[in-house]
Image (cartoon, rainbow, N blue to C red; front, top):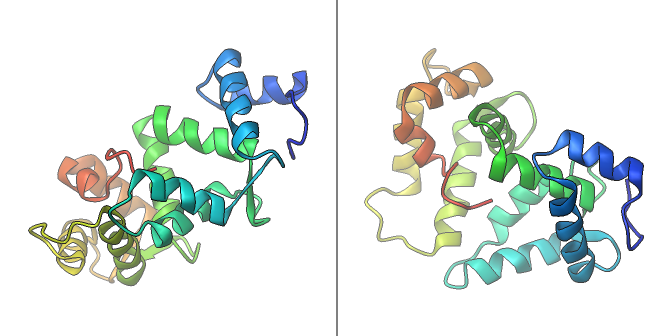
Length: 186
């Protein structure tokens, strides 16, 4: 649904109210802001990265923003339309734990093959480290990935299935923190 108008039509609005955790008033507010920032009704990868840069001025959020952009861009057309934006925002800010886990799994499963490899997780974790700009943490990205995999990869195949990912996050809240699900990164 391309949003190139100044107002959402009734059908589009009702669909977004039904599919998100936002009220009509909140959706209107977000839509107005979206159109102010993106008059074309679409957010490009470059514009998306600039938004992340404003929140993380001391680091380099480019890689992480690109990973998040790819999850937001549901129809894979290279831009984020308002409906994609508000749906992802609803999930990441107001979604239930399971919904957030599903979203996080999609973020970490870079190649969309249904599993998360050690390399995929390392790419995301490294991107988070670069974005935050703080390498004085106790763990390196590699150590963090090793710790997460040692707890989650129950079958030892060096890949995380969706079931392993979900179960590991349910059983150990430190894994949720390590995955940055609640650190306001999205």
